[in-house]
Image (cartoon, rainbow, N blue to C red; front, top):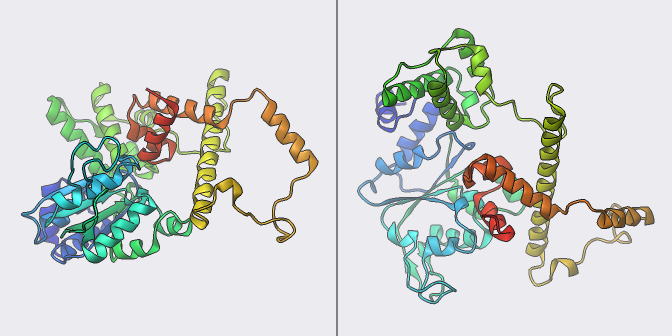
Length: 394
C-alpha cells in the first residue's frame, strides 16, 4: 500500500479517516484506475461512494476525457433509455428533436452509474450489450452506434438478493463487478467518526467566522457507539446543526443525544411510553402506514415476477399452483371469504389512500425533497416519482 499516494488522494478529495477498510478501498481504486475495466462500488447510502469513481477517472488514461455521473434511481423508468442511449426525433411523444445520450457524449471518457441496482430489466439488457460489445441502438433508431466508455457503477442494494428476486441480471452483475470496491459504513470506522465531526465543525467555523464546537470525552464515546444509519451524510448534518444552534462550544453527551435520532425500530416495536396520547397515535399510524407501504411494494414485486415468468399473459389470468396439485398451496375457507368481504365493505382507507398519505407526510417532513423522502420510505427516487405522478401530488 502506497501510503504517501493515498495521503495525497485524501487531501485532494477531502477524504478524512484512517480506517483500514477505507484505506484498502482507496488503495484498490488507485491500483485499478489505469486498468480499463468496469468497476462496481458497493456500500450503504451516505458513505461517500461518489468519491471513488472520480478518483478512478482522474488516475486513469481517460483523465483528459469527459466524466459524467448519472443517478439511475432519479430518472423515471420511461425516460432512462433515452437518457443513457439517446433517441431519434419522433421516437416517442415529446421527442421533438434528436438527442444524444450519455454513452455518446461520454465517448472516450468515464460514465459513473450511481444506484445501478435501480435500473429496469430492459435497460439492464441494453447496458450488458454495451459492456460486452461497445454497441447500442438509440431509442427509435435502426442503426447501431459504437462507444468507448469506461463504466464505474455504484449501488447500496444487496445484489445477490436482487438477483435472487429477479430484479437484477446475474450476467450483468458479473460483468460489472469484475472489480468490486466496498466502502465501509461509518459505524465501522471507529475513531474516524470523531475526526469527521471535527472536520465538519471546523468547516462551519471557517465558513461563518465563529469558534468551532468540540466534543467532550463522553460525547466522543457516544458518537462512536451510535449506529449512524445515514452514515457520513447524517454526521455532517448533525455537526453543522450543532455548530449553528448551540451557544456552548463544548458539546456534552447530553447535548449530543438531543441531536441523535432514536435508533431505527422495527415496525412491530411500540412507541415510547412517555409520549403524549396524540403523539402515540401519530407514530403508531406512521408505523402502520409503513407496513402497508412495504406490503404494497411486495405485491408489486410479485406481479413483476409473474410477468417475467409469463410476459404474454395478464397477471390475473396467469396460472398459479392449485390445492389439488400442491398440498402446500394456500387454501381459503368460507370464514376467510367472509372476513375479506367484511374488510372490503368497511370504511377503512384503501392501501392506495394510505400510500398517498404516507408519501405526502414524508414529503412534508422533508420539505419537498424527493431524495430524502425516498430514503425515508425505503424506495427508489424513480418509484417515488411515479407515485407522485400517479396520485397527482403537487
